[in-house]
Image 1: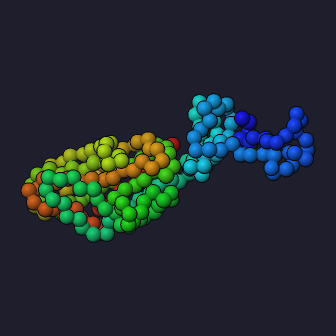
Image 2: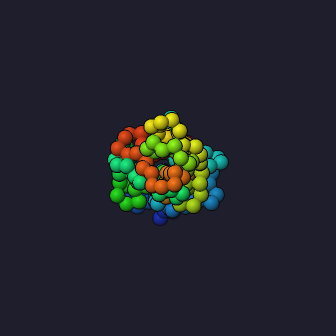
Amino acid sequence: MAKSGIKHIDVGLELTKTEWESEESHELIHGNSFPSSPVERQLFYRDDEHKWYIYNGSAWVDLQGTGGGVMDKSCRVHHSTDQTLPTGTVVFSAFDTEVWDTDEIHDTVTNNSRLTCKTAGKYMIAGGGQFVANATGRRHAQIKLNGTTVIAGQHFQAVTDSGGVTSLTIGTIYSLAVNDYVELGFYQASGGDLDLQGGQIYSPWFSMARIA
């Protein structure tokens, strides 16, 4: 396998000028999984991700998202209406409005509670929401990975000031693979239904941005 990421085919003992200039004499090194024995400076094209990588001697590096700086792979969403949460149950917030999305991370219709990783890497993931005024019980926010693993959590006692709302903001940094997804869940223990306020850029909101 060539270090350049180009494999020469159908040639004799020596590569002639005619063979070099023929498009049929070359093939890009590519596939759906990385070569098992790479060497430094070797290029490889991932067919399943549609991206070029280079091997730096210890790891495959995404040429689209490294080097002079990380290319923008980020998304921020919020929801346009209040969402009613029953007491004692974690509910994953829906998000029907995109502030921006540079990597097809979110869909406003299908599974719109999810932010889905389309470019592997380390991500800053954050979100928040605001409950209507109610002084009873606890409030909780969590970020869950792939519907199974809580990767960040936060608990507050409800604000007891007259008319005071309870706001939560949560964040973490986490390494995501392609097609990993995260959701933002809320919980309240007021003893009855309680609204998570919507229609604001700050409630509820959810975002993620690739940092490495």
